[in-house]
Each structure stands twice: as structure tokens, then as C-alpha cells.
Amino acid sequence: MAERGRQYLILADEDLISLVEASDSEAFATLYDRHSRVAFSLAYRMMGDRQAAEDLAQDAFLKVWRGAGSYRVERGSVRTWILSIVHNRGIDQLRSHASRRRTQERVEASAPRSQPSEAFTETWRNSQRDQVREALNTLPAEQLKILELAYFSGYTHVEISELLSLPLGTVKGRMRLGLKKIRNFFESRGATVPR
Amino acid sequence: MNNERFEDLKDAYVLDALPEEERRIFEEFLAAHPERQAEIDELGAVAGLLAFSPEELEPTPELRYRIMEVVEAEAAPRHERRRSVLAGLADFIGARGLAFGAAALLLIGLLSWNLLLQDQVDDLQGQVRNSQSQVDDLQAQVRNAQAQQTQTVQLSGTWAHQGADAEVASISGNRIVLVADDLPSIPEGQTCQIWVIKGDVPEPSGLFQPGGTQTAARVTTPIKKGDTIAVTVEPAGGSEQPTTDPVLSAEL
Image 1 (cartoon, rainbow over the protein chains, first blue to last red):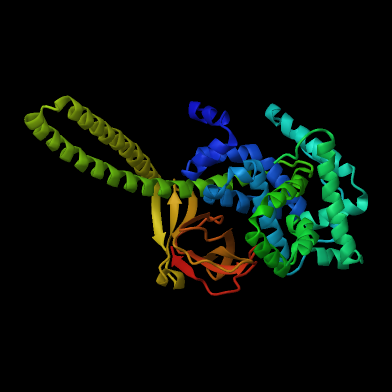
Image 2 (cartoon, rainbow over the protein chains, first blue to last red; image 1 turned 90 degrees about the vertical axis):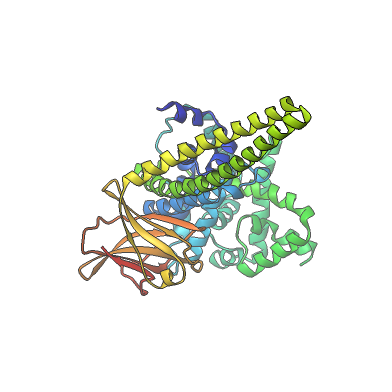
């Protein structure tokens, strides 16, 4: 690897995003290599097939490239910002498709098997992911299902109410309790919610 | 909307689960009550944790290749723009350097403040040399990019008449990229689709969203002399066949 490329590896995400804003394609490539796996995984979870997930990830990363100047450090980490772009674009696409392929069955279907992580530096991120999963495991199934239908499948609370034949107030209540329980999970361990 | 309604909707808001109209009303209330933004950011961070929960999958190397191809194609023109700015800056600094040089000679003769003013002149000359070095470096990058870009064809059509400047470039003989400036924006839920038309048969050859002042997209179908390349506006995700008239096209 070239010396310059090695230098990028030691830069923080916030430094890299400043370089991306100045049209540094190597800095962008480093950011892509750091975050493409988690971004693609979210895209796949939302879109349900590889091709659509790749299209979504491409769309989102090009928005990162073209819109690096809109990143605000006070609103959260670069990683969270990238994931929010994937999520927002994914929601837009899911809602704009005339033939929605989102089904309750797909949400309930088991997620595909992961490929093993190779990078040692991913360890702390894997730990963070494990914590999030542990937090989600504490949720009752009916709360988790509603959070997933909203977050991953792009349903509005009204649509979820119709889909599950539940009063709208119940859907809102489960959203509230679900999010509160996740927050309590971290707070009970003396940790703040990662941002 | 009042505080009670805000409390009722904030969880759905951070999950992006409000219908359009409710979301608009919610955001209007939030804009009028900025003191509640921190609460929403905090709740949004909790909702955002869901993004970390899916099992991790590796994207294909082709995805990286496709993205970097667009990024590198867009990076070169941006560097060229920056070069123009730097060149202008160098001219400006150069002119100031001469002016300060003359002033320094005058003041040395008249006021014997030569040491102080000479320092200023040296400093400005250093800035000029530094700027010139950056300009030379950037010019070398541009020359390199131009050397690799072997052939371009200008696209015409309704968007060109509206001021868009689009061309298809063959880079290093095997990579075909569509590069455009000042494309009009398109409605949400639509995308630009590239077609390579061989005879009468259009082949889908890439999607892109017009973004900012400059756009670049890879043409995924190999082209040869006599083919036509065209761009249409299609529903998001693209179409199997063009459903609208081309907004840009060129015969190769």
C-alpha cells in the first residue's frame, strides 16, 4: 500500500470527511472501506435483495461524496450519518415503489448468514453491534416487530396499525416502550447510547 | 400542534414512521421550538441503533469499483475548478507582490525602513512560490487526466437546450463515463437512465441522479461506432425499456 494510503488509515472519520469535502477521492475510499459493510447490511435488510441493496448503497455513498459538507459533528458520528443517509434513501425508495415488495413475512424472515469479519479493527464495532442486539433481545416480540416494520420496511404508524389490525394508540405505545427499553438497557449499564 | 401532540408523535417521528402531512406539521413545531431538538436528537440516536442490528454482509468488490469510478470521474473536474481558483489567487498575490516590492524600494530610499518592508516582500514572494507550486502540481494532475481521456462526444437534446452540458468520455480506452454539468433536477421517485441503442434495440446502461452542478455516471454497456447513447427520465429503479423521450442523446 502506498505511504499516502497508509496515512489515511490512521485518520479519524471526521478528518476524512473534511478531506472528502475537498474532493479527496482517497479519503472517500478509506471511508467507504470502513463503513461499506454495515451500510450494505442495512441496505440489504431494508431492500431484501442484493441488487437493490447495492443500488441503495451506491446511491447513499455518492450522496456522502457529494454532500460531505453537510455533515455536522454535533449531530453524531460520521458512521451514524452515513447510516442515516442509507436509511432515509431506503425509506424513500420503499415508499416510492408502486409495487411494494415489503411484506410482513419478509420482516419476519430470518436474516441471511453473515460472512466473518476479517478486520481486527472491527472488533469494537462488533462489540457495539452485539450490545445493540442484546438490547433488542430484551424487547417483547410485539414491540420489536413494530420497530422493525417502521425502521426497516418504511411503514408509517397508520399502515402498521392497519397491517397488524391494532389500534393506532397501541402502535404508538409499543414504539414508545420499545425505544424506552433500548435506552434503559444502555443506561442500566452505565453507558450512553452510542451516537 | 401542541406539546401533548408532540409527545404523542415523537417516537414515530424518529423512526421515520409519520405520514407526510404529520411529519411536516411535526417539523414545523420543532422549528418553532428549537429547545426540543436535543430531545429529538437523543431519541433519534436510540432509533438509529437499529441500523447496527442486521447481520453483516460483505458488498461485492464491483460495488466499490462502480462507486469509485464515479467518484474519481467527479474528482478530476473539481480539481480543475480548484486550479482555476488557485491560478487566480496566484495572479492576485503576484500583483500584490510587485506592488509591495515597489513600495518597499520607495520606502527604503525615503524612510530607511528597509528591514521591516523587506520581510514583508519576502513573505509575499514565498506565498507566490508556494501558490505556483500548487498550481504546477494541479496542472500536472489535469494533464494526466487529459492524457487518459482519449475521446469525448457531446450530447444534445432538450436538456442541452436548457443549459446542460453533457458528454460521453472514453477513459483509457475501455471505461465509458457520462459527465454532465448543470443538469435540471428531476422529481422525487424518478431517476435518469442511460441507454445504449444498438440498431433499434435500447439496452439499459446505468442509472444516475442529477446531483449538484456536476454529475458523472458509468455507462455499463460497451459501445462502438454507430451506436446511439441516450438518457431518459424513468421511475426510480429504472425501466426495462425507455418510457419517455430522451432528454439527451448522441450518435457515436
